[in-house]
Image 1 (cartoon, rainbow over the protein chains, first blue to last red):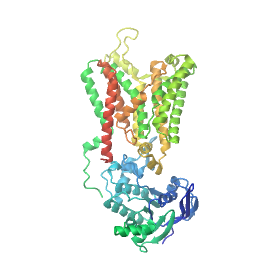
Image 2: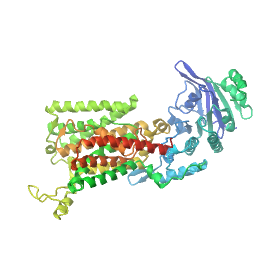
Image 3: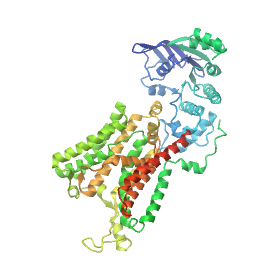
Image 4: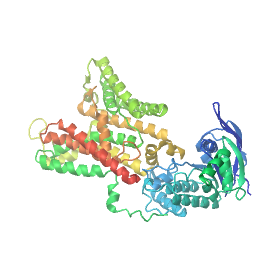
Length: 259
Length: 365
């Protein structure tokens, strides 16, 4: 395996008296999908917000490409090449696909003293990049609101990849989607991995994780319960780890299968 | 992954979801209506045209500011009070204190744009709705205007502004007229009406195009260009559409919003300066209810009250509808209080139409 592009060591995060993260270690390599699993409240969100520069860790170190990094804002993390796609904050529905795609990175063309947005180029690149991800837009001017949830996630992923993300953090990209759309997003994640980007895939769905993941780390109550490689762990074991074992095992036997 | 159930967009539907649709049809409607009922009243003679186009231009100037601000997701209810404030400020500085008019005008712009920045800063820092913050300034500025006016002159109307501005280089940029030579020539040719008696005999009744209209056109073109063609325009849409999503991808949302508050204040001051130079006086009660008229123009123009969507051209057409109806009712001899009835009615219709359009573009059901 190649060297990890980002390594988080013994990350602790306290909010006042609450210990949200109690020493979490995690790393991800280029061209790998590392799934971060955990039930609600396990600390997944806090952890990825620490990785993407929203929170500063109380203690612990972050190594990015082997060097220790301190991110003061999401902008710093973005500049370093860490892009985060949030579940519901990815896109602005009223704006066109092109306007969303280039938001914050608009291409500018100078005509005399006037600096204008280069829509010809912006539209062309948007269509091309979306086609690469398997979405054929009717027109780049269509509002994002007309796209399905899966397509919106894909636009956000395509945008992050186009703007040079080295690490792509996906915050529950599949949790609000139907079966068909989920498969499409998982296929997109696979494409991104093949492009050599390190993917951190946050989910609480074991089956989605197993479909694309290379490694799996389970968080529970702010602690890592261990990291497993693909093929080393069964869905049932993962599920047990996530829920903390005992009670869910009983629940499952009464329900007759994996939840 | 293209969904085969998604119908091809028809031309008609694409026109339907343009924000200006309502304003364009409304404009056609009011022109047809007044051509029919007031066509021979002089409303469409040169003087009549000047009359309603000046009124429309006034609405348009503040509507451009309100439009960009609303698309950026905020309101400014202090526009009307700021118009009164800026006017009184110019009058006190130039008439009472004897400052040159250009300096008085520049100081008024500086003060008002700073107040706009303060509005924006308070909204951003406190996280309060701009509705509340600017409502506070609606009262603060109006109160200050009356107090300052009475404190310096014991009156709420200050005259002599035009006299003080004679020979000034900046005042005509707001209160002057252009193409006067052309209009004189057209009068000499007998193409347009001229005065037949009195001291102005031989001069055309319409002397030229008021600078107010030039300001309105300039601001509309600038606003439309900024919004639809530039990077900053994309940030305006983004800041109003979803501030958090926008800031996650690096859009400086706070800066955009504060700048739009400043621009709104700028347009209010343009309005005030033009009005003061035209009337030759400033009054503490000027600009009453203008903030709402600006907002209504913007909404008729297709902007959503929730931000993130709208059109400057639409807002300008909304202002044109306003001006034509307000003056048209006067020309047709109708009771002018009916204007307010019209305003209320068209506001409701515009909002219903906009909500429908929003459903189409976002695919909500």
